[in-house]
Image 1 (tube, rainbow, N blue to C red):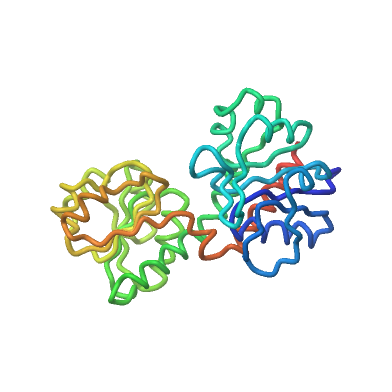
Image 2 (cartoon, rainbow, N blue to C red):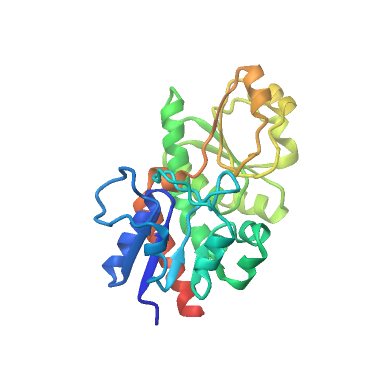
Length: 286
């Protein structure tokens, strides 16, 4: 690769672990948005005007923004605004980001920037399924008063995370029920030895101890929760707003956890290395 340097702007510890992995492979690293204590990574935090110009590539965080106006930078005491000035600063550089469409909607200047959405890459999503599933199980162990072994667990959705999570729960000795819509998924679920249920039949299940939702649309409405899940703990892994009626669950007295950004919370080192590997793949293809 012709690239020799990266600037990491904002984000959580997984961005710093990504920076660390890049540095270990001989790249020059600049960081911005990390003036608050966040561990001893040995990087000097620089202002934008010093960090961006010498770098060949820019790496923005996951999620890109939480308020729609500033870069997501929890370790920065100074907001980093997503404005035309920032876009101009990035012109001529490769910019690796999540939420690419969000950037493009903010200003036409971003269309002149070489944007690459690493969050949308298949290898990124597949590899991140592992820390997401491990994080979900950690949440379950913390919230559930029984053991995973012997518990009856429902996994809603048989995508990347659903597949990995079902296997892990089965390995821990749980009785695994997996809900899906597609007939081929239901057949595969059965072939793997799990109990399968059509998503339209969620109201028919009984005795579920733990619910893990991976579907990013409302499938656990108040009626479904009231009929079948009053004694369950519901862990929603889907992106906001999630797949659970949280207000309805609260009125029913059902414990819920909206477990977002688990890879960055439970396995920032591994997640950072996945970010680095994905970006390097994109550079090699470019």
